[in-house]
Image (cartoon, rainbow, N blue to C red; front, side, top):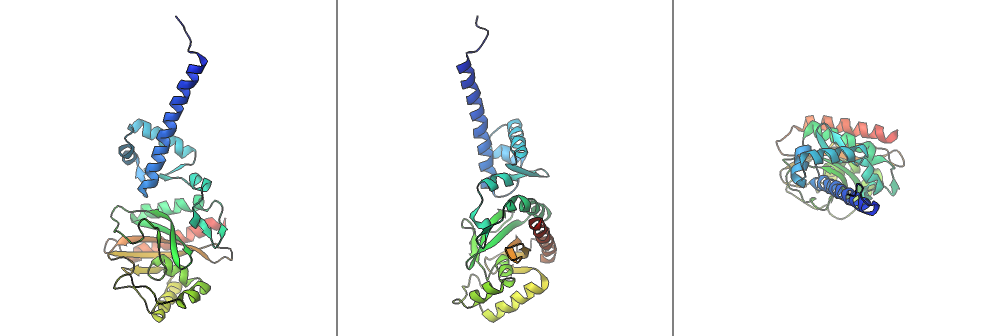
Length: 266
């Protein structure tokens, strides 16, 4: 009786086992990325079809390697993976912010935990906002930005914040052709928009009340840390109308924006 396994057969078995684990790990990452919201162990287990034991083990491995982030009982794609392939939108005015996603994502997750509503992080791209991070709430309302992660500046809370704190962008935008009306509540008169942007600077937050999508309200605050110390991003929470009080949301969003600003300046 042979009491050993030939070396080449042992290596093949080891490779097959490793490949299976690798494929399952990739499937979990794809599941978390496609979900666009934090998922708990049971949700990942049910979505992938893997046993709960296997799912828990692989999530633990991915978390230790920085590819998955855990907040409480929820998991999301981790900052290390994004740093390997940085999203286009994380370039602010043509300048990369190294390690910025790793510094920012924990604060976005905390904001999601506090509000349970959709959390957005946006940067400017010409005369639009580009959403570079989105954690979707379970009760979210469909939006024209779904699938494209872009929206106009003048009718979104993040866009108003970016306009309010960037004088050059504001002047160029208001000099452009007529503002597009997205809903019956969209502000399209330049003078009215300028008054609203002045209020954003005074209060430190911007609002959009069914101006981009019917049934959706949003509050945003500025994140500072661009090349000149100016505004570089806007963080926001979007919720169905009536689902959450805007003053409570604005306090949480403002606090998160301050925390992210501090993290970027470290």
